[in-house]
Image 1 (cartoon, protein in one colour):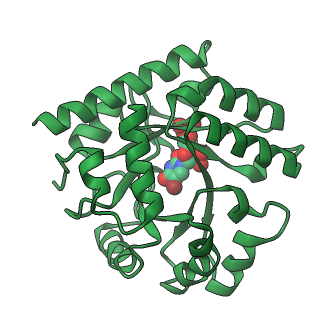
Image 2 (image 1 turned 90 degrees about the horizontal axis):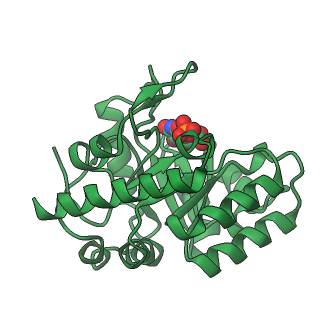
Image 3 (image 1 turned 120 degrees about the vertical axis):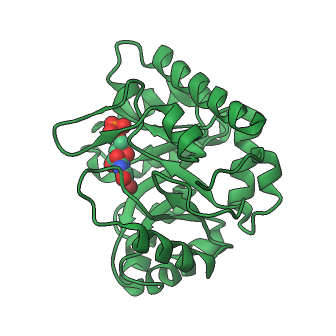
Length: 260
Ligand code: 5BU
């Protein structure tokens, strides 16, 4: 198992992406490795959640295309919150097309994702052209890309060979790709950030294929650096108390991993 025992601050030194470096420093200084998956469908609900939980998180992950009353004012507000409370915005767009198409999807359309999202993700499935296309837009704006190496859902097709090939592809773009969406750390190189969705205290699953691991399993056994939590927090009676639990648990596991 490939698990880094180094601190986030130590790992920041190895990053070729300035954004990855900033993210490691932000996590270390704010003492949080919790990302909130704010999967709500109204702009006001998203802003309320962001405002409430901003002090607890290093990353706010959005699905901007599920917002029913989207206006550009929403992303401007999110950016203000991100600056004020020091967290990064991650649009979970999962690009999966040829380079020329993703370039337009990233930069243009209704959402102008590249103008406000520090981070986006993409499938490696189409080959390296998808990264080149996104990099044409993202590099000059100091954005970062996360490649999907391994999903959390049951029956996904991302086997060990696919994951290794995704790593190899990332290595060609290590100033722009900051790491992976993955359930398991992929490499000994300390600069890659392993980001894990499907995390819930108590583990379990939902009825549509989502599979959960606990923060302990994600961080201590599987080498995750950032845990993404959605319904475990936003469907709780008291999301703030719940977010603090996840934050504490995530941070304790990270400290324990560094001590080992
Ligand atoms: P949940 O409510 O904690 O299950 O939400 C998980 C979020 O992470 C949700 O927005 C998914 O779209 C996202 N996700 C995921 O669950 N699994 C994956 O492999 C990837 C994204 Br990639």
